[in-house]
Image (cartoon, rainbow, N blue to C red; front, side):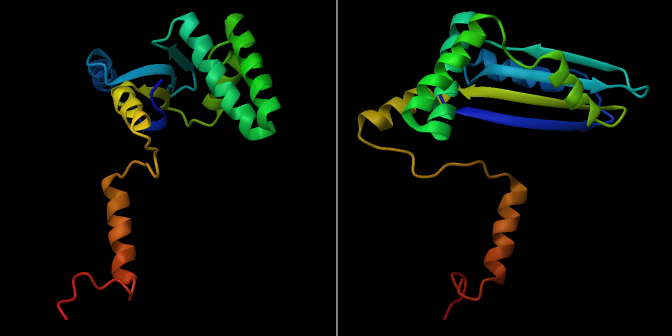
Length: 173
């Protein structure tokens, strides 16, 4: 399994022409990502709600990935015993088709949306990274740091560097 990425997007007065779905479909078709779970919620101008859930996983894959996620969450919460309990509980729930968010969860999300807006909650696997991950592990390596840097984050880092008196990389003296 590759690294998982949680992305939450908000749309004010959404203009859904299919561009977001088209880009996701291109990434999926190229084998770059796999959607583990996705929820799109739209609240129209009158407050009526439309929701759509999607996943690229079949039931067996949901149970496997759900067990891994449940086990890791349980490990963090309660050590080895928590890992076993978390994995088993999540796998049992998935075997009973309890996958994704239920209607109450969706309504809770929609309550927070203003009228004429939408949200997309997307959990996807970086399938492109599976081979790299395996090669790094086989070579005895490990991830030391990771993250996504968008242009705004880079500007914030630059601003912080500019305010730091100890940062003299551009000083010719």
